[in-house]
Amino acid sequence: MNLQLVDLTNQYRKIKPEIDEAVHSVLDSGQFVLGKFVSEFEQNTAKYLGIKHAIGCASGTDALQVALMALGIGPGDEVITTSFTFVATVETIALIGAKPVYVDIKQDTFNIDSAKIEAAITKNTKAIIPVHLYGHSADMDPIIAIAKKHNLKIIEDTAQAMGAEYLSRGIEENDSDADNERKYPTGKWRKVGTIGDIGCISFFPSKNLGAYGDAGMCVTNDDTLADKLRMIIVHGSKFRYHHELLGVNSRLDAMQAAILDVKLKYLDEWNSERLRAAKFYNKLFEGTAATTPKTASYSNHIFHQYTLRVPRRDGLTNYLKSKNIPFGIYYPIPLHRQKAYLHFAPIDLNLPVTEQMTKEVISLPMHTELTDEMQNYISDEVKSFLCQKL
Ligand SMILES: Cc1ncc(COP(=O)(O)O)c(C=O)c1O
Image (cartoon, rainbow, N blue to C red; front, top):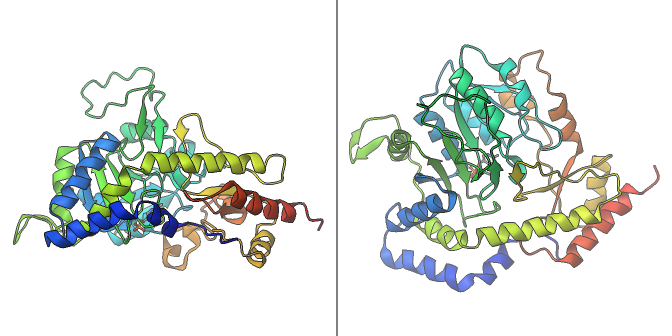
């Protein structure tokens, strides 16, 4: 059986005529950077997410960096996030000269444990970056309440969660802050990335909405921030050769925008496919030693990854290798233990859940082309290992 962790080729085959036509339109237009294809995709994405501004850029990593720059975060500032995430979340904080401060995660959702955020706040804290890991929303209500109380900005790392939604249950009993620009209606499902000050999306090919190369986006409801973001991605300029802000070169390329615009139409259908496959896996693993992923009542899960927690994880990975079953470990080493970031980790840093998860998690093939036959085969092998006597 030809199993893949992510199957982009067969997905492409299904929509080949539309993609090929979009690519040819860009070639015919001679407009390869920014321009109408980028604007159209930005508008369609903003509409899909229900947000005012969508600003394309070159990658999810750049989206995080330019978001931090737009919020004026820099040397001496601290940004709270987790250590159980892709390196880009922390790399970009470090790149702009700020300090990442780690808070532990919750065992059930793998996302930031908001009950532990306040203890990490100092006079230098400027922002929180919740990561909607694996496609499951972080619990945003308490994060918003903390951000309001301490005047902090929120950047949502939505790299893995394009299309996921969050249900706000209300943040404060007596929220009388009528002048606050940010209104958080309760009982309303909203797309993640649209809840904090800026949402940062990755369109890396393997993401639920994946380009055929690198691409990313910042989204915001704030007009001033949107203006700044638009300038920062083109060398800090609004008018050519007039540089008002420190910027970078991080433009979304037209070819990727045209491809993504085609794929955006399929996103909800594909996310539903993943949900179906995840539910089937859950059923197949019922009654085994594997802990299947939970979906909190406040989140719908788009299953960017289908991640189990298992005993004897390293034994299982060796077993799956011997059976040619692909898998992923996201993430085997927490960021506070990575050589490049050791200096950010205080000596008494205690992240027990993060440490535990790095030893237990394993992600199984998850994509839109999975068949029941494939899932039966994969789960049979996982179960056969889990049942082995030691
Ligand atoms: C949580 C998270 N943040 C940021 C990124 C960076 O996105 P990109 O690869 O598009 O730069 C990724 C990509 O894998 C990610 O998973």
